[in-house]
Image (cartoon, rainbow, N blue to C red):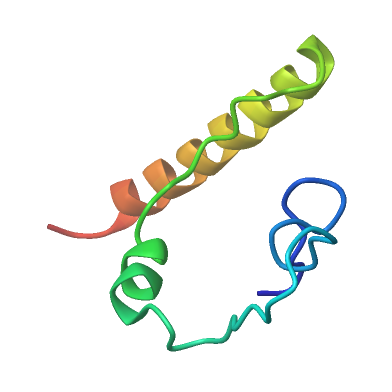
Length: 75
């Protein structure tokens, strides 16, 4: 994982309230890692409508791109 910050202050990986060591490496959860490559995730906590529109536009462009690629493939 490139960035291990989830809640602004580094939690849970570098949380000042947790005294243990967090082990986070590839291969730790092989089933989840395999599925992750095949799913889409949607962020639902947009800061404002402009951010939401930008995310929706990026999703639309992505769907259109893959739709056009699949239409070009012979059946």
